[in-house]
Length: 296
Ligand code: ZN
Image 1 (cartoon, rainbow, N blue to C red):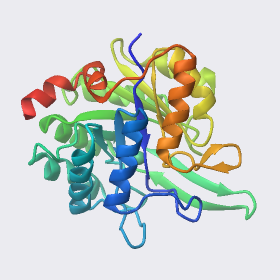
Image 2: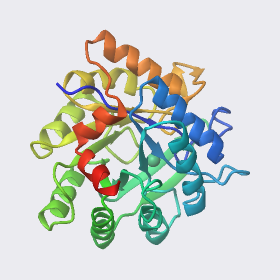
Image 3: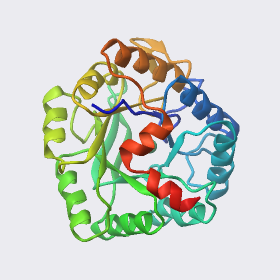
């Protein structure tokens, strides 16, 4: 079995400092979170950026450039930029970073998320009996094709975000029409209100539904990653942790950082006998090495 690739999702677009004051906002804070996560054992950083003074999620090319530059100064982690962005962002805004960052080999992301379909996306407050977030993560067919074509054209490997089983078929369609390059890489995102929930049965079903030879990773909303993640570890998958997905390190205890969550996952995996991939080992497992050589 390959070594375990851990992705650190250090800020996302939904977590707030009201929920966890340790959430990074500025390019310096985001880069430090990535470097600390890399030192703790993460091979990939999944990156969103925030408006530095307010923390508002924003798909800003200059902030991405500054953040990625600082990350590159500090470590060799694989940068995976979000093209999901955040609620209310247009398709154009979300994808524009790929061509904009690809002009400079040092700032070019090696990977980017590609949401493989549309899904209701809700956050519900039981206390207030009201939706805190009531949105559709909209990804029209024509946009799925454009996003995949744009990433492939620029040599950025898509990480196919799967919230629902049918999205695997969407990804296969994109592959069938030549928009993707095999082997495909999937990220199963479980536990979103509107998508598939965090169960062993769902995870195994998804794993058994992807094309042979693909790689896959798991992330969940909340602390389930530290239990369901063990199924990913023993069944050949990879895992993602970080403040984007969960504000706690254990029940009721806020996480100090995404790096602390990476450390916990490293401990779990080592106890189970699976070693952790370095960034270069992850490049080899994901088939990124050849892309990187072309870029250099
Ligand atoms: Zn994200």
